[in-house]
Length: 382
Ligand SMILES: *Cc1c(COP(=O)(O)O)cnc(C)c1O
Image (cartoon, rainbow, N blue to C red; front, side):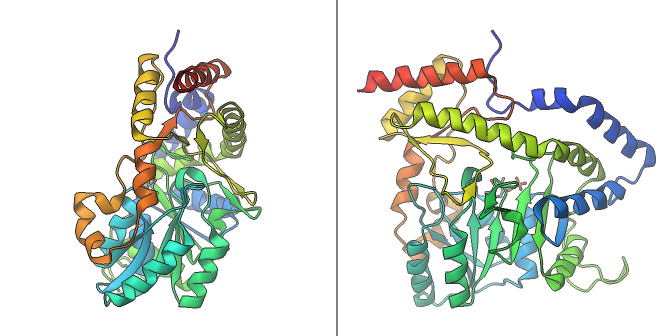
């Protein structure tokens, strides 16, 4: 019996092997390894896919957030609100531009930013003498954040919204792709191999409908270049997407919508079988998730850890995303101590979450194995 992969990238490659191999070979032959024609073709296709005016490819999802913050002129003394329950890059980008990440709590249901916590955090940040400038939302595990409430709050308080869509590229909010930027100033994503749309290395992209922001990001992406290559208008980065990765993404984008449908079918099966025995992530009615992860919650840390061991004994892989919220990580303790914001949901959730195998290529048989293992484990608990 073949082992259950946590994310099945091999089956995906099997499906598009000829196309991908041909696309890579084409780049090797034309030789434009940096900013070759595939990069511009990908950017145009990303705009068609997302419905956003400007799509700017870049080196990875972390640099994408750094570039977005630079375009918003975020600087030391500024505070940017980020959820504590996320991948480190969200807060790291804020710290890298010299600003202060202020952590906010999440909702137990969607695992995304809690707007009430955001309101408290704004108050606290001002009291601490910081200058609040913006919010970075995260669509954790592929489920869109509460954009209507967050953007309403941001507008009222004069804050920008950057949407970190590293896990939600292809997800929808009110019938439109999250990267369309209907509810944010800038959206960013990652094409890291394990993300819903991944390349074969590092990659990322930035989306905006604002012409001025787009041209700044394009400049920051290549050493702050001006109208010609050896004119430097600002301190930038080297944050380009490799042509080979763009060529690969072009082929993967062709089957992506189909994969989103498959992900939702698998998540639907999981939900039907597991609802009631564990807590599943809530997808609000106006949202479509891309299920970057299929994440469940147990009643306690002990139960979660036992479940992980139980699955592992049956050779079913599972991963804890994320075992420790950012405000408790060594690198971010100083920021967290200064702000003193209640982050109890982030702390609790980190103790009880577990992500199960998820990919558009998860077979019916493997899914049944996972589901029955979960059912047996949970019935033993009752
Ligand atoms: C993966 C991820 C990033 C960073 O993307 P990289 O391409 O790995 O730099 C940022 N934010 C979130 C929420 C992520 O999951």
